[in-house]
Amino acid sequence: MTIRSWDIFCTVVDNFGDIGVCWRLARQLAQEHGHAVRLWVDDLHSFARLAPEIDPNASAQRLSGVDIRTWQPGTDAPFAPEAGFQPHDVVVEAFACDLPYAFLERMATAPRKPAWLNLEYLSAEPWVSEHHGMASPHPRLPLVKHFIFPGFAHNTGGLLRESMLGAQRDAFLSSPAALAALWHRLGLQPVGGALRISVFAYENPMLPTLFAHWRDGAHPVQCLVPQGLAAQQAAALLGIDPTPGARHTAGNLTVNVVPFVRQELFDELLWACDVNFVRGEDSVVRGLWAARPLVWQIYPQEEQAHHVKLDAWLTRFARAGVAPEAADAMTRLCHAWNGYEDYADASRQVAAWEAFHAQLPALAKGVDRWQRQLQHLGDLAANMVSFCENQVE
Ligand code: TRH
View (cartoon, rainbow, N blue to C red):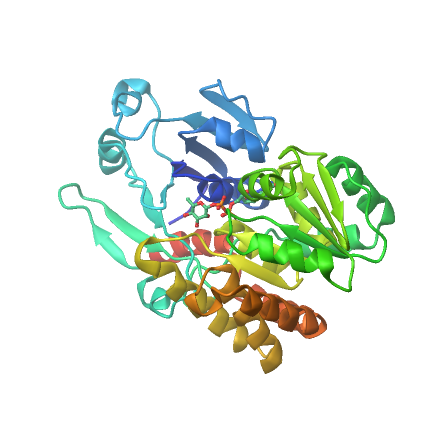
């Protein structure tokens, strides 16, 4: 079927990953494919953190070529026929947020039934390839939903990646003025010769150990902590404010609390650092595209289900042609950072950092190699367009 327009429904469960992914997808479909995109969001306050132009009180607004509307899950009234709008060519329910029944009825009775996609959470697990594209008929209405699984392997939806991202990164890295502008925006002075580390994380029991080790270590470390959970933890530890501009220096460690910046600037922060601690679903992908050594704090799930996901991801990294010692160092530090039992002891945590630090050049090469391979999967937005064009009647 021919595709020209999209409805994307997003609910903000917690944090920024849901809206982060939906906003990226919506912008890309509008800007790179020229499609009409209507993005339905239930929490504009979270959204405004990533895109400060968003008016949190406006029920309809337009930004970056995307038509942004508010909705409340479970409320049918705004989607009744009297509301007067037709569903677009493709309807995406992001992360299994249930569509309002009134909207589903509109889809079922539309002159041309839309393609209906459920965009799933990201996982590197092998089963994802088998489930990507699966169809599920609605129990009552004449509609079929298809499941789109982003992923790190062929036969998945791939990963979101803007077509100009590589060129933007190269331009940024070759421009001292762009780098200086970033430091200015973040409100900090770079510490000469320091290993620059960004820490975007949930509260993490290993943080005090790392801080103490970096403070007493042989190499200067400048640690940039975006405002939020990790900054609150860092500030409480160091006796500073958890607000942007706060700074602490002790021994060889400097910690800067930096502002939570618009989504595009977050990429610049990752490009400008030597090591990036990332979290959740969207920033781990941005960390990969930054092609720097990265440490992933995966979103915690019940019964340690997230450990299986993390290990699947680490296995894929190890198979991407990276030096075995580097892959092993990455695994150790990710295990320690994600609270694996083997790393409960501070001395094992420090050893994991030291092993990672010793492998930084090999890790940089390995991540760069993997991210180049991952680009061959095509990007998720383009893959979703072609899925609808080729596989949905
Ligand atoms: O905020 P998160 O922890 O989101 C989580 C995860 O995605 C998790 O898988 C999901 O289940 C849960 O939400 C509901 O981490 P994530 O996914 O990296 O999202 C953060 C977003 O914030 C990402 O789009 C990058 C963006 N960001 C900025 O725009 N500016 C910033 O300064 C920072 C630090 C992040």
